[in-house]
Length: 159
Image (cartoon, rainbow, N blue to C red; front, top):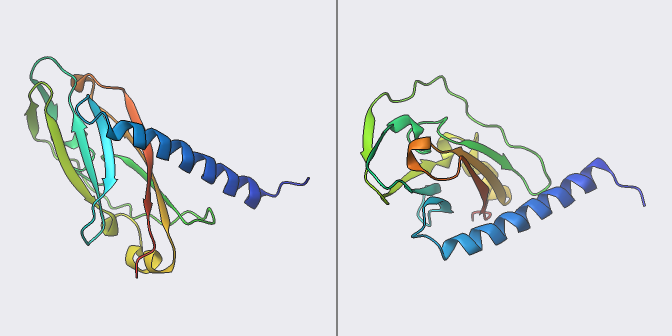
């Protein structure tokens, strides 16, 4: 059996999708635990809704730029078509916000990322096919949660 690059890429994408789906399903039941959750907001324009819950036992001060929604480079995002082709991403020159915020123990902070500002030609692409968005977030040490979180969100084809 000969495996082409396209077949291997498709199989890898499918396996990553299934693993992410299983991880996301089990995490939904544990929303009260410290960690990071990313879902697709049901309202338009399409956005990722991100919740970060602190695991610290005391109030901590962090730079606002360390939150995944605070600026374009707050988290790593990769958008892929079902055939494995990567979508072009917007990469603006941008400075992170310098302000600080205080996070109380167990606090859940929620924000959104507008995908149309990050994925080039987003509305056009989502009218043609589903889009897989893979994400990774490096959390601040002060929150006392895992150093890295990651996952996958399916954006269904829009009509």
